[in-house]
Image (tube, rainbow, N blue to C red; front, side):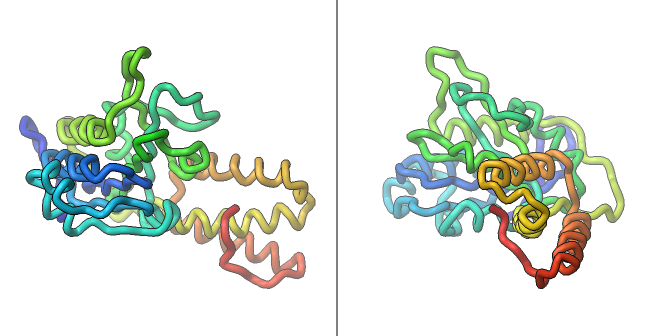
Length: 260
């Protein structure tokens, strides 16, 4: 259930409660513990990216208070499908991973301020990787920013449910409320960004950036640039139409396109 996140000390933080996306979780008990942490902090939508374990007695045993979340959890085939409806996609990473080049990396306590600055209609996903090694670098590239929980260097990784709880807790306690911003357009969803980058990719190939090592790097850099820009859905559709007009001039038919 989508509820405004309530602070025990102040008025609610007015951004919409994020969905939690678990990518290829391995342990049923961890999924149950995540559901309990979400219920504790007022989060109501859980998405599982396959392969994920069946949710039975073990999940319910670890998920006291979060049974409804487990019953309503959505299963999808891949990360791309999971994040397609969301305008703000927040990845998570351990401190032991190498720094992400040109990627905004913040602490959990900074996340609420970022979400408050997003347009009011923005849907947000918090994405967590599998217990064994977290999100891959390619998966993190699909996120508009990355949250890292500072840990002691001797033990830099957290249990999956602990990571979810820490980030959800910081959102729950964040002071202040989102200022009214009228009818401002929402951020472009991951699906809209993929559509735009698919068309841009074809333009780049047609104008000479067709060497695979150059082209792939350019598309990655464009994805980072778009992720940092806070582009709206309307803006992404305008740029997509521009790319399609260029392709028509170059002798290609319009396409919805697929990002590479």
